[in-house]
Image (cartoon, rainbow, N blue to C red; front, top):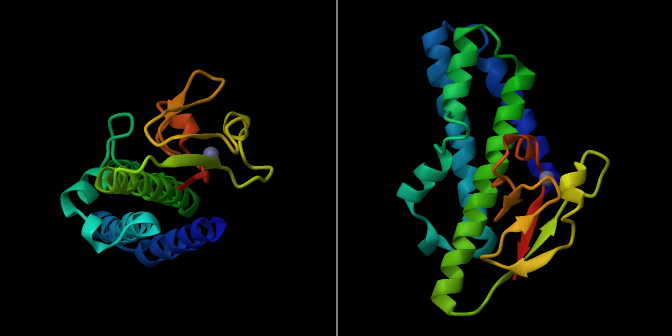
Length: 183
Ligand SMILES: [Zn+2]
């Protein structure tokens, strides 16, 4: 799974460089289109991890991709950064990786919910960290926990999530690379 985030990081740098010399209006349009393509791929990867084509729903995909985190979507944040001149390759990479992770994990979880309804079989999810030095302690705390699909994971800072990237505090979602194993 780490390779996915390395690849998103690499793609974010390419997207940044390709738009670097464009006027702001064109830059906003091009970056949003390019990042959207990556997020669509992440949505589809989440579906295919546990389901098939029949679980693809474009309306739900749009809702997941353009989800508001603290009042803003990734596209709002990128546009603001372009306007105030603070968008750099690293900032774009953090946005792309964080939202790519959120889209993938949300899609995987929501598809699993549909699989559970369709088959009538109770599914269980295991919290899996990258198990390296970058994993934050509140997430290491959850490593290996197994709960029914619909149960929240609760960590020691009072935050909770149904899946990685779904915490209530943004600080628990930014740069998270945790995933689930759903069976
Ligand atoms: Zn994490």
